[in-house]
Image 1 (cartoon, rainbow, N blue to C red):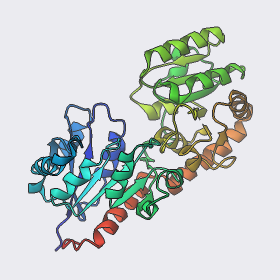
Image 2 (cartoon, helix red, strand yellow; image 1 turned 90 degrees about the horizontal axis):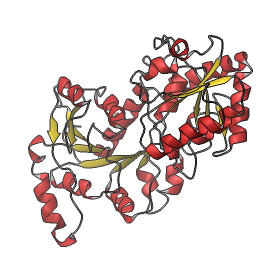
Image 3 (cartoon, helix red, strand yellow; image 1 turned 45 degrees about the vertical axis):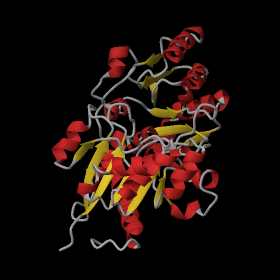
Image 4 (cartoon, rainbow, N blue to C red; image 1 turned 180 degrees about the horizontal axis):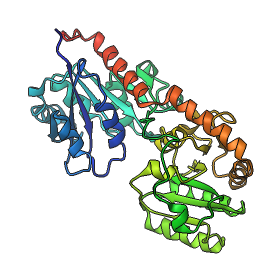
Length: 380
């Protein structure tokens, strides 16, 4: 009987790294007859630590990267850093590190790993570090279809990439979830009012200011947003906008809410207003969750979002930074309940067909097996 393949998942921590839950969705669902997972973080102390511990898998707190300079000592320093990982005999590493580090694949290979893969989960690029990191990788999971054209279009890098969008637990994000937060009642929103929702941390790149301006142009709709405040000045600016636009009685910036499925159950329309100058999404999980929850969704025409929504079929795509276009889209949905229902059903079907967590796990397992096929790994 073949032994499960030891595989290490690396991430900075579960304290500040937003993709920790995305990674653990995969780790917790791996076929344990094929793979024996472990997790490594720079620092323990996050909310998902307990999840790892309860799985009963190795949970390592150690540096899996080092400074690249001075280059003359890089090999020796990498060899030293690899010592803590050698006893585990990991055949494969999967990095969820989000920056342009290229020392991790060196450490991985010196520890005995046969293959090193990473997930490209954002649209940052521009440094030689990203290029070196990609050249050293055996496979690369890309979050959206624009990445190959923009980042991996030289040195045959596209041959290493596999499009693997994020999947979500569709049973947890479902149209059947009850609105148990009772936000409409608590905030004095009429029961028959149309409510627009947004799930995004308060940072300028997410485009809340564009959304506020658009909502101001659509009478009688209410807006609820949730998300942590990452930029205090921006949050203050949004509060000032609410007052200057005279919409403070129908727009509510609620801050962090733990129960996202219950929040989504309170809204009729979901908007992700990310703007081009601020950021471009890798694969916006919030949009996938809202569509899975059966919401009529609107997103901007940026990488990631336009892979998820089929415009005019499972949602609406509007130009980024175009307040008027966003207002028109919101008004279309707000004025037509049958249209919202049609798009809600199509959104749910789109996620079930292409963006479930089971599909993401299957795609990554296939990637792992593929990149180990030519290594002579005796466990295959």
